[in-house]
Image (tube, rainbow, N blue to C red):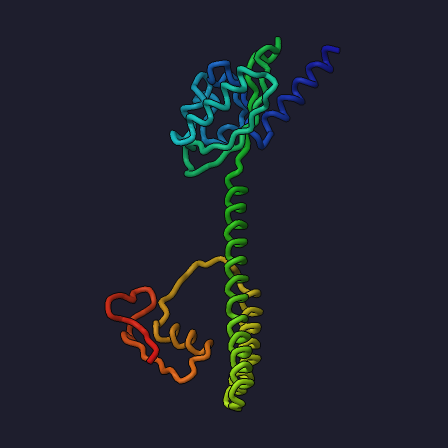
Length: 246
């Protein structure tokens, strides 16, 4: 039985020492009483540096009040298992985000402390942000495509109505152009779908090109286009630069 106990203790020690999570036992007032060896890998501090220190001193000031409230609520109510996400002041890295799950074992005769399992979720959070950004971009693309496809359809419908009213065959030209514009939009959409959605680099676009592209998408009837400030880019358009129908 003694050998089995020793073997069990060694096995437990090996599991704790090689765990990718940080396992700690915290006192009732929030001080480290035990920290697993993985602490240096996860938060950049040694066991000797952490033991006896307040856990809150390693939390970003902006998150400290929230962490303290969650921790002490768990201390007061053993039935609560708090799960806390917070940024920690890493010894070498910036913006590390940790998820900590606490279990109140203060009344346990063996542990006599608040057990906290902590893991690094920094990369997970970055992926979540990337996914959210991609979803936003997809929604914007969907709205843009929906709007752009409706434009030639609206032009075609309006031209058909005019043709029915005055029997002027010139309106049919606009109707015939609509499918070609829609084909172009569909081709561009297919190209866009094959490209990464992350926007990394931007470039300036000639204002005249933007206006001309928009102008070509609508029925301008007898109007003509005049663009002032031809050399200005869309980003720097100010002052007297303008476009107008005449």
